[in-house]
Image 1 (tube, one colour):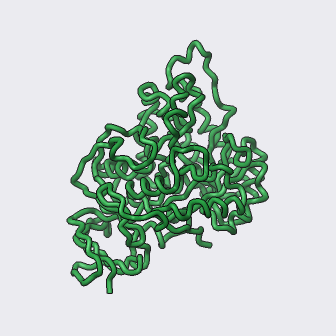
Image 2 (cartoon, one colour):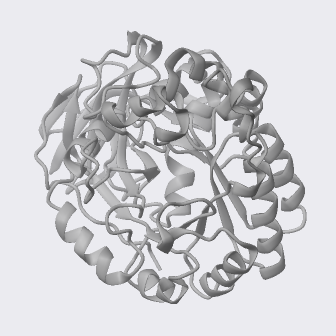
Image 3 (cartoon, one colour):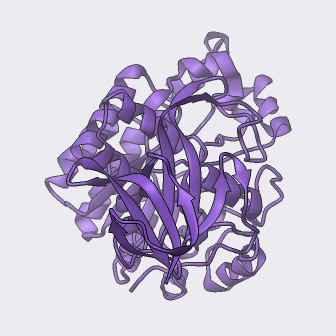
Amino acid sequence: MIDLLIKNCCILLNNNLLQVNIMVSEGKVTCFSKKICEADKVYDAEGKIAIPGGIDPHVHFRDPSSNPAENFETGTLAAAHGGVTTIADMPNTEPPVTDAKILRDKLKKVRNKAHIDFMLLGGVGKTTVENIKEMAEAGVGAVKTFMISRFPGLSAPDTSSLKEIMLEIKKYQVPLMVHAEDEGAIVKLKKESRNKFSDYAKERIMCESIGVARVLEIARQTRCPVHIVHLSSSDSMDIISMYRKLWPKITVETTPHYLTLTMDEMDKQGPYAKVGPPLRNKFDNRRLVEELTKGNINFVASDHAPYPKEMKDKGYEEITLAPSGMPGIETTLPILFTLYSNREITLETLIKVFSTNAAKFLRIYPKKGCLLPGSDADIVLIDPKSEFKVTEEYLLTKTKQSMFLGKKFKGEIQATFCRGELIIEKGTPLSKPGHGTFLKRFP
């Protein structure tokens, strides 16, 4: 007996859209068929495109934290609204996740809040290297370190600490994620010549490329697989392309804002456009989209990092006082689908960078990241003919200061299923907190 029948949807098969019916039993995809069969529940997709649920391996849901801008309940619901069915939460919560005990404590606090499935990421810095083994054994999806961080247990600002971390983590089959910005490369402008918010971006224009070069040289020397998070610039992509010839085990992610926004937004929206690394220019936007189509950027992650209005507004007095980050998990798929609709990327590329490749990176594929018999029935239905505007009312994240407010996108998300459960339909939540389950990295 089939538990759920999603009928009249289109799936990508051999680069062609084929109208089929999807059968689901016990939360798994059973098969695809042209025929209609009996089922406990029937959902008529009416020609919508069905793709695998998104995997976002880079979110900051702030739980547990003193930052009230997001929590696991609101964050996972916003994720489902954006077509994401599995997230991996970053370790810079309070306290930062730098050992197995803190990981277990965090899991107890968040597991009954999640609407969708989730993983937790560990953190490491120069003072916490000895904890990598226990975090790997506890099932973290990856381990993250920052070349710039206000958390001592997550900071690895110098070459020796990065090398020590790589030599240790390569013993375990867990990837090392690196926020690669070299703080020593900041060029401070004189106060009298720093009269625009975008000058902040210009001060840091070389930080990422120098940081990426240093990280990849250490990775080459230690033969350690490494992952560069939120890549923003063409210069950094050039460095990665060169180093891949010397050491191929390098993976890369970018974000929707580095694909679409420029540093000019800082002069329009002030501290709300402040992210780390800072926004770049249109040439960088175009280059990153091209690298997506070539497969040189592995996936797109939201880096969903909201802050309350009062914290961001401090940046109007002095831009360095505002924290870096913006909400983004609800707009990743609309941005990618708009690129597809405009023929800048293919639907195959969209599925790879939104879902499949991140599932492989976190080692939860083919349970997640694909529509195949036996895979979890994580399914997103998209209306390919629709166009919609992002408004505060549209967003379900707690913090509404999106950089994409007022912008129009193609391909509105009609429904999101997680393991066969309808989580959200046309912006209306239908699930309860606690449906989401904790996933460990497959050995």
